[in-house]
Length: 189
Image (cartoon, rainbow, N blue to C red; front, side):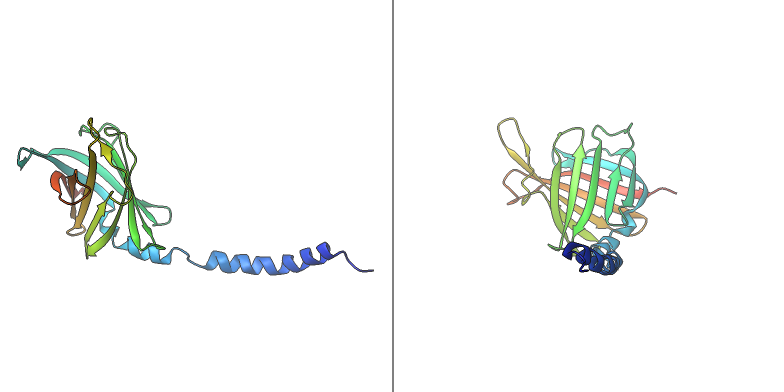
């Protein structure tokens, strides 16, 4: 007696699919992303953050706060969090990942000030220097008269013990930039 075709197909697949699945799970699909994220390893840890704003042609006295930066999702994302009771007037969370299909880093920022989930794209312009803008994603903050505020974020990793972030602002979609904020981070302990 002949077995029905669907039963025969099921039998063949029961032997074939487990080996295909095993090959799929053994493959590190995120290898290129993991390698790109490794360059950000010195940023992980507990930090004292000194934050200053650009006002009237100079930097304000820095506010001091703590920040935690840690890897998550099997080292494929780097997240920064400030304490819930932050000393700063603005609390922000950022997450960085590398898009291995487009060879670009992406940063997502959430805050309790602008109320806008901001998306940035960037690249490592030289070892230890990562530059992002929100120009291409177009996630601009808007002024009361409809002005578009674009931002450029420049991370400089000096060493395992310190790194900095310079935030610049543009009202002409990146044709020119002005200082906005700087954050100097020093490792705790």
